[in-house]
Length: 123
View 1 (spheres, rainbow, N blue to C red):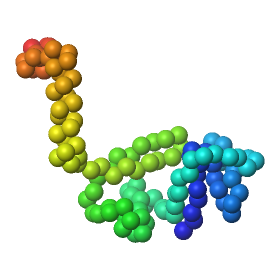
View 2: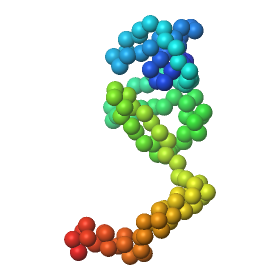
View 3: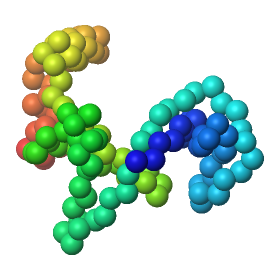
View 4: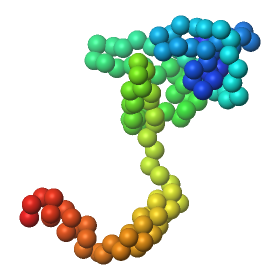
């Protein structure tokens, strides 16, 4: 396993030397930055059906199990996997309260959503 420290995702630290990384992967002169992100990576191969095996050490560390759902983001020439998790009841209650407060602030009435749906559907 290879470990790197990326600074603002544009800097690589290797053997206590900091280098900036350009989009094409070229390393430039050592740079300074205040933020540090420890990132680990391993090499994986895409199978015939487009499947990628996430290394076991990563799955165990992140609590990833068979059947878990992920969002896949395309970021330039990179893919980023984000594990999807249902919000906790506290988070859900907080989101619901925020939605109710927003509706109240803007004068929404109970039938406004149904009316908007009918209007969009042309009914």
